[in-house]
Structures are given as C-alpha cells and as structure tokens.
Length: 601
Image (cartoon, rainbow, N blue to C red):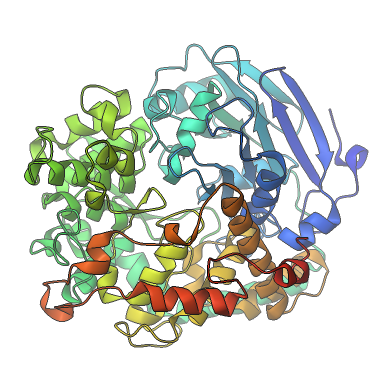
C-alpha cells in the first residue's frame, strides 16, 4: 500500500483517499475521494451520510456484518483553524434504527488525517477479536485477544505498550463488547463517540480498537489567508464572554445554575423542571471542590475540558449533560458520586446521557408501580453498581442495556421513556424553550441537542435573544441552525465556536484551505443537502411524521416550575411550519423539486 499519488491527486484541505477494511475477508484497500463528493458533502458527517446511504440499505441490520462504520475527518481537520481537531463516525444506529453520526475531540482525528486519509470504512466481522493499526507506512489488522475484556483505560495502556506512546486509539469497553445499545466508543481515554449505541456496532464486528499515528502534512491552498482568517476568528472567540470566560472558567456545567433558575433543568425523569440541589453539581461546585486543571482538545483555544480528582481517582469531567444525567435526572446531588460514576462510564464505554435517562425511566417505572426493578431515585450509593450491571448485561441491567424505549415498551408504559426516535433526551426541559423542542423532535438521529442548539437564541441570546415560550418563527431559525451544524460536523469544527463565529468565517476558512471560493450561502446549501439526505434515509427506513415527536409528558403535562408554570410544547403547529419552510409535504417527505435542487435525484 502506498502513496496518495498512486490513488489520486491530493486536493488542498483533503487528503484525497478513503481507506476500506473488510474484517470478514481480512482485506484492506484504498479508494480515491472524488472531488465532487468532497465539495458536495465536505467530509465528516456529510461524507459519512453519503456512504451510509449508498452502502447500507434498509434490510441491513445495524449489528450485522454487512453494516458499516464510517470514520471521517473534514477539510479543516488538523489545520490551524480554531478547534479543528475533531472527527466523525457514521453508521446505522442499533438504538434508534436511524442514520446516525457522532463526533469527538481529542487527537484521534488529527493523527488519522495525518496518516493520509479522509475516511475509513469498516465492514464485515472478524473471526476473533482484532484491532486496526493505521499509520503513514502501513495499515494492518492485528489480533486483540489479550485486549478483549479490558476496560478502556487498561486497553489503551496495553496498546501504548505495544505500538508506542505516539498513538491515539479509539476503543470500546465491556459495554461495546456486550453489544449494549447505549455503548460508546472512547478515544484518548476520555473523549467519546457517545450516542446511539455506536460502541455496540464496533463490538458486533469484534473490533476492539483502531490505533492511528501520522505526521503527514495537510496541504493548504493559501496558508497566509488561513492564518489571517484564523487570527480574526480567534479574536471573536476571545471577545465572546461564553467562549473566553464562562466555558474556560467553569466548563460546560456553567449552564447548570442558570438553566435551573429558568426552569429548564429537569429532574427525576422530567417529572420536575428544576432540581433544588442544582448548585451542588454546578460548574462552580466542580471548580471549587474537585477541579485539578483545565484541558483542551487539539487546536482548541476554548479549553472547556475539566481534569478532576476524587480521592486517588483522577479523570475528565463530568460535563453539563453528565452531571444532569447521572445527577438531577436520578435525584442525586452528591458531586463525588456523579464524578466517580462518570469515570466508570468512560472506562466501561457507556453513553452517560442514555445511561442516566434509562436508569431514570427504570426508577419511575418502579416508583409508579408498573414493575418493581428494585431501583429508586436518589440511591447514590448504588449508582456505580447499576452502571456495571448495564455494561455487563447482568440482572435488570440486561433490560436497561436495550435503552429506555425498549425497556418501557416491554411493560406497556412508553410514556415513561424520555426519548425521541429512541434516543434518550438531553438536559433541557423544552417546555421552557420551545424551539429546542422542535429541534429535538425533528433531529434526524433522534433526541439530540447538537443538531440545532436553539437554547442559544432562546436562553443565551446568541446570536440574539428571542421569546423562549413562543412557538412562532421557530421553524426558520431551527432550519438554519440545523444546516449550520451539519456543516460544522462536516468541516469539522467544534460546535462551541458557533457561540462566537458566523457562517462567513466558516466559508472563509474553507476557501483558504481548499483554494475554492465558498460563500456563506453555499454552506447553507451543503448543510441542507446533508440534512435532506439523512431525512431520505430515515424515510426509506420507514420513519413517518409521527416519529418527529416528543414524549407525551412534554406535550401534555404542564410544568409546575414557577418560571414556566403551566407550559407545554405546542409541537404540531411548529412542525407543520417546519415542513412547509423546508419544501416538504405535510407528512415530512421532501418534494421531487427539492430533491432535484439539492442534486439528490
């Protein structure tokens, strides 16, 4: 195997090559990244969506050998653009059945791109446990019997002993090996491709890890221009109070106290819109009680990561979503317990959001007398044992390993599952930020806050403040945000830069890197193309308008929290407006005209 020149010309910004590994046949091959594909989908999430749409038809089960895992970087990955160290993973989710993507920081994406590739397609199933080694010199499938059964930390240490310290590894823990449908893939020990059960897909292929190392140069069309635009972008990041002060000082959990005061910080499986002990698990509490130091992903000027320590244990986090999911969602206010549970989830390879919300569902099922699973709100001392049961599918953990939708459906109590399209909801009571409710309901991968972060304009005033309790005008803003985030996930840049930068900067960064002129409106078209392709995939899988919804509790049960007392999400009017603005019919099906306009015919 070798030089990119043998496969095709390297494009500026892109490496020009796609790596394919067939584990069933033990075959490794390379393909050219076509220029048309790169410019229409950029990379990352967009490129992954195109590959999954083309190669994973409806009859393919997510955990079958025919399923694909697509790891991809973007044209800005490993460049000097701010926060450009991320990478993306695309697949068909075993938890939701939707097309799915997840992205992560750390340094894996940088090392992978510098090994010479834009994407890795993994297919098939190995006869026994293996890992993949990818470097500038070689790509190999190596046996991993001694790694199977190890947690993420132990497996990473062993891989560093075998391959050297100058590597980055993405690996699964016991949860992925046991095909737990809320299992994550962890890279650089504590960074996560977390949601949708992607770790189970990797486990189904008997693939323990993917190890990357590389120092190849990423060729840039105009280095001087890229440096200047990056300099300007960093000035905006320094000027924003959120990216220059709040996130670096207190991490993502800086949002806890604010959201709790506004009545949008849910607790006890969304039975309440606030948590009385919120201050005990806030970003301020983390800084005061357990913080060791700040930490940044590769190339990130924000440094929102937290290195923390409890007794002799040290790790990263917990993040905002985690202090909620393993804390307020479960009626637990002990920060040390939450932090140790977060460390455990990272080692076992579990998505903290889905783990917490599924436990919350089980606790409410028990509380309401639907079924006695012997699990109750507020049981801080038992939390770690519950997490282990899920990862190893022991006892009631085997039921919870399927996610909250399957768990609640088993007992004919679907209303207790706080999910959309099977993906457990994040830490926002959208009865108090209704555009965010529309965003969660229409998300192509299920209940996800990163598709369109409507909390920005509705709560944080970014880019401007709007009425969070109104339903009118939310469709258009949601659509624009969905397109922008699809582009960010494809370039790839961290979502947090969006708190300070606009589409203009993303277009200028891409133009400088690629040598092709991109305008902001060009990026909106690319974002719409990616979003629509994902929608077409889900329609092909049988999803309907009725799936673009929220849990009954948020639609029908008024909040009792004083700031938003009496509020519910009036979803249907927003949904109809959303479809109309998109050029889709009343059932949410894109018109033939729209499909042709986007080059998807």
